[in-house]
Image (cartoon, rainbow, N blue to C red; front, side, top):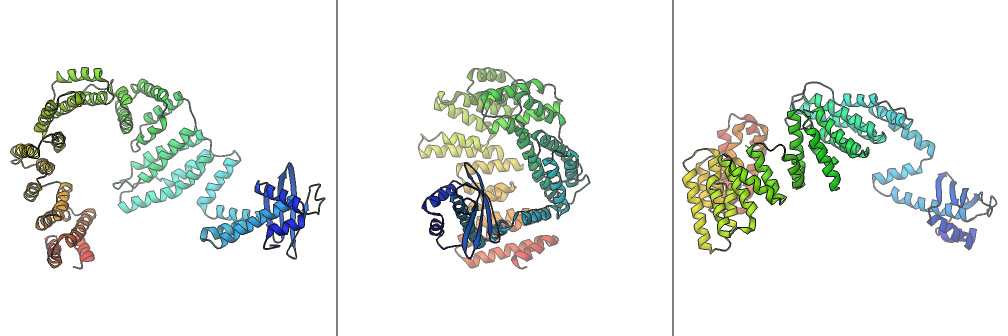
Length: 561
């Protein structure tokens, strides 16, 4: 720097007037193409017209040259001031970067390179790896308007080779490598015209659909590739800015292609906007051509649309796509629910009358009762609603229906509520206690949980088989309130998993043991007793599953056996 105080120095060599003008040009970002090579600084300053400026450092002082009339080639004019200030600002930024993190220091180094050196280094980086060379060659061809779509498709083919893969580790490796290679395509596609990018994306989908017929992907390793292709399809088809008719035609062709291993459901959001008229036009167009699809294609499309509209609570659109296809009782019950949600009361009452005159099974009758209650809403007397809710619970013993009934008892005294809870428990015990099915045991326990009778729930859980998720919920509740009961429920739950002989189940047992160990530390009044109980359970597992060598190895790893 010519001086620690650059402003004072420049005002001295250029004069106050030229300095003020140069300061204003710098603040207005009028300095362009600033470059520094050793002690020579060059730039262009825009001031009505463009002026080339050269500054050199001689004995720690600036000497300036400018094309403007004021400078006459050698005087230090306002343009020289602007370039000197811009250079000072750049130098300060470089100093900041040089003392920063790794990324900042690299940025400082790149900024210090001249144009030729930077280009040479960039070319070396672009061509060092074969995959990078192919990618940048294609990008260069796109820039020269000589792109060959086949070259991009070849990268997709290389990323997704058609071969049988079934071992879990190899399936993961297959798709990890696929993503690595597809990243090149991800960089290339935005540089193409949108319609070409869509064409390549459709090719990628067909290739993916083909290879998935050969791969056994139990752990859904392929989802990362599917997600990438979904994003391409949405991004580039949207960039095409097609009119409604072409959007619908494109959507139709997607479903006509009938991908067996790729779901189009996430793509639907791309076709529906907040513009109600446009959405209605698209829905109507879809309905017009849905009939031309094969039965399985039409069903897939309808289910995808239903899922999308359900997520967005778009009851009117749900009605539009369901009215013509609702021929069976279950479909009509769904449609009735949409009418009620959309507050189309007349249509709901007409369909309700039709369903009440139809022969239904018990599950359908219960659903119809719930819908009837929803249709009546707050217009019915509370006593009528309570009776309807109790009748629904009595017919199916679903805990959710019991909860809905109990929620309406807020006007009663606690003793009266308790009587209803007891009545519900007695009804459930009478209908379910003698049954041995897992579903009935779960339902009975869930009824006790709904009424708050946890001791009864624990007793049934100890004597019956339950779904592991429900048993886990009970064990977590019990260990905080009843040490012995909680320990026994955890023991029963943990014993369930090693018998399944898979690594995932072994690890579930280990995780539950860790959860129990931590819970015992917080809930037991005697840490010594808790440790003895836990160590005994681990020893019991070690003996009970002594033939499961991999499980015993995990017990040894975590608990030192």
